[in-house]
Length: 112
Length: 112
Image 1: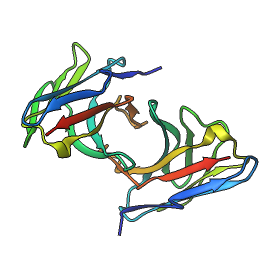
Image 2: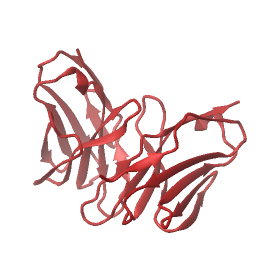
Image 3: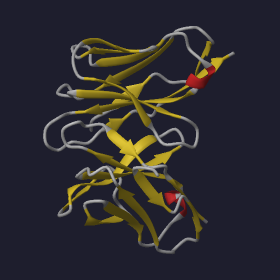
Image 4: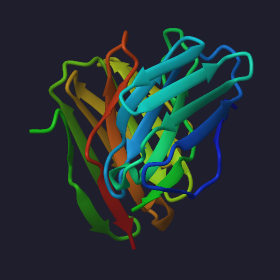
């Protein structure tokens, strides 16, 4: 059973702070990693994808991947109240049989 | 209009009734998925299809069936609904090369 674990929430940060979201996965051959944001009652939307070890930055978001440690994280700089949502980590093991395994999500609240 | 459209968006039904949730997409993707989301449990894969003639069971397929009527249409059926199938259901699509999932707006099903 392939597992994706996220740090238990909820996570609360003040506006302007850095929010750090973490995710570990069990399948060592995983190749693709995604972070989705989901507002309450809405569908998940992709905010970051990462495929290689290291950091990937997109605006205020930075994804970090360490395949040796089977660890992927998402940093949100200068957090805004509009970032308040559940963040889902998703992992794919690659190959032709493509399907994502999702973590249970971490609820982030950014306080004004 | 949304690229991935689900109908109905909300449905209340009674135990034992047959229910069909429909999904259509205009993204031209070959791959389509049905996920279920329960509070605190994340997204769980019910069924997926990589082309019109391909149907695969996911993690929690018992009590569900699917039909891929065309490349753009993928429907989920509950032959005899039970209360623990009360959940938020998402249809999603992906392009085989990109891997990113695009979600519909969700169908909230309540079984009394």
